[in-house]
Amino acid sequence: MINIYEVNETNQMIENQNLDVRTITIGISLLDCIDSSLTKTCDNIYSKIMRIARDLVSTGESIEKKYGIPIVNKRISVTPIAIIGGACCHSTKDYVEIAKTLDICAKKLGVNFIGGYSAIVSKGMTKADRLLIESIPEAMSVTDFVCSSVNVGSTKTGINMDAIKLLGDIIKKTAEYTKDQESIGCAKLVVFCNAPDDNPFMAGAFHGVSESDAIINVGVSGPGVMHEAIKHARGKDFGELCEIIKKTAFKITRVGQLVAMEASEALHIPFGIIDLSLAPTPAVGDSIADCLESMGLERTGAPGTTAALAILNDQVKKGGVMASSYVGGLSGAFIPVSEDQGMIRAVNDGALTLEKLEAMTCVCSVGLDMIAIPGHTKSTTIAGIIADEMAIGMINAKTTAVRVIPVVGKGIGETVEFGGLLGYAPIMPVNQYSCDEFIERGGRIPAPIHSFKN
Image (cartoon, rainbow, N blue to C red; front, top):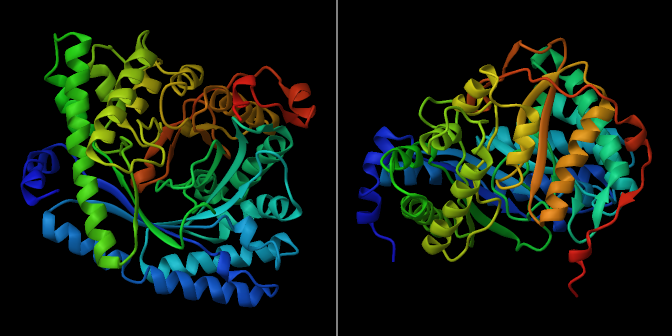
């Protein structure tokens, strides 16, 4: 039983170490909104979201006041829209109308983001899937709060290279469509391998078809708390360090569990999972890089960085699963460059490169995240970056993702400002050698041999 005394134990963390609950996300199934009429489908979507999520923001604010726990975001995820629009969308413009409906819901409800403008194409693309993907540049440019994701690979099915090639073009077009806003449309688009059905974090959240009609998923945070704990482990061996990380993760997750239970009871919606990811913010002292450097690295990116991140990620999971019976989503340590002051510092100092970040994604959640690259980067090069990251996810049976932003008009050494939780980022160099012929092959990369477990 969770009680107020456990929350009181975290007061120091909240007041001085940036502890927060990053998000309460309501997942909503839209399967019963499907209709052959686009107008009717949009009306059904609007009615259902407004009905189920009408009290989300006020409930979150009430829990904040009751316990003194900051809840940074209130969000909604929905069934992948490629599925919902299959019967009524005959053009990219039709899908954009659904995106606009989602955006209206987000604005009227006062939520921070709504995710699920998504397609699941790890084995192949239907006509509906392709139309949704092709609509993404316009949809991201005409909406403010809609987030998009495309799952292009899995350990069971392999990697859809046709979809990856298409997404290289789509990311470039999305950057161009939103070039007057520093190509921010790309910050609302993520490409996945092994995407989970219950992720509460944006931009990749969607409500999987295996989920119930509505569900509450909560994402916790706390890099600042973890950094402070690791600092006090200076001079201790790895066994002692791991115990400290694990116990700290337990305390952080218990706070999230309390918020999830309160929200579930108040909203009369079943509790789904706690995502115990350590998610940084641009605030000083709320950095995954700081955690790694407190273990003894001069800068994140130095030799030993991948090992340090593996320790952090694994012990966070071990502590978290002891604190909640229902852990899911992504659950680990995020390394989004633009959202982490320590990562930005490491890039600016020349310690952290795109290649080192790729190596780090082998052991963390989720992947190459919020990385700004030169606007002139070729679409095939972006596709190659995605393919590499998807291969890591497929072979290692883990979730990996790519959220890169080719910022139109900017080059290496310049900085792009996104604002808010998205922060700012230095433009990172990209390997200029061509992978055009590789990407042009098309087809599907087969699943690895260890996927055959039936």
